[in-house]
Length: 67
Image (cartoon, rainbow, N blue to C red; front, side, top):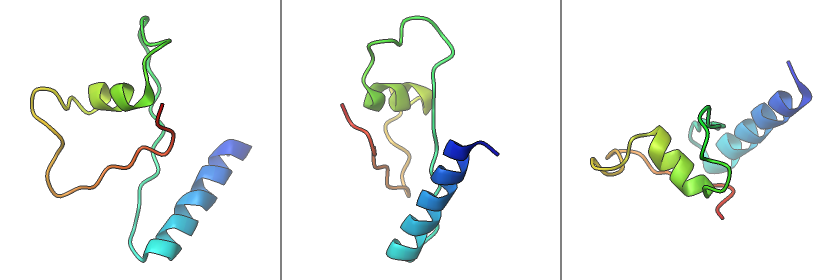
């Protein structure tokens, strides 16, 4: 396991302990050209196909590194 992967797992465990609920810490990166200057929020929206459906109900999304 890479050092950064261990650090993300540690962070997820700390968030879970603090909030008292399970959390998925996810890293999404693009695999296509044209995303070099796209803010993280829009990368997430594209990856989850938010438009035209909107954010999925029953989940809270929090961008940890907003532009």
